[in-house]
Image 1 (spheres, one colour):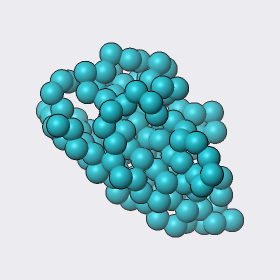
Image 2 (cartoon, helix red, strand yellow):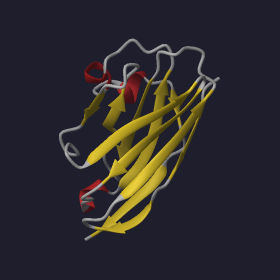
Image 3 (tube, helix red, strand yellow):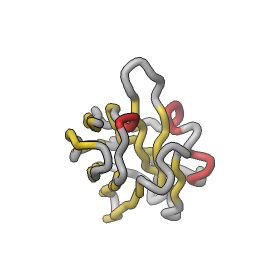
Image 4 (tube, one colour):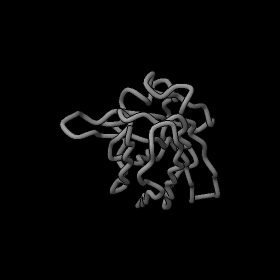
Length: 131
């Protein structure tokens, strides 16, 4: 069973940076996809960034050039990071890490469907950006 645990949220002023971490364990396959989804109050969940089995990445247009996703792999344990720079007030949201085992999707395919198809989720970490 895949377990997913996020950390690193917090409060920051606009223009600042935060780094989120997500430790995931229990994968049965080496073909995994992992990513970050956010949900602001009153809004639907939005795929923010994803990394596929070949370490290709994809980002929502709203965060391109400001957010960077990366992964550290260690057999069945993986840690994915989201470096967030140039934060804006509209980035305020609960950020969730999501992981998919035995994932054949490319990063381009995964981003628009990860909110519905990824099966393993963390509890979320709050990011608050004040202007």
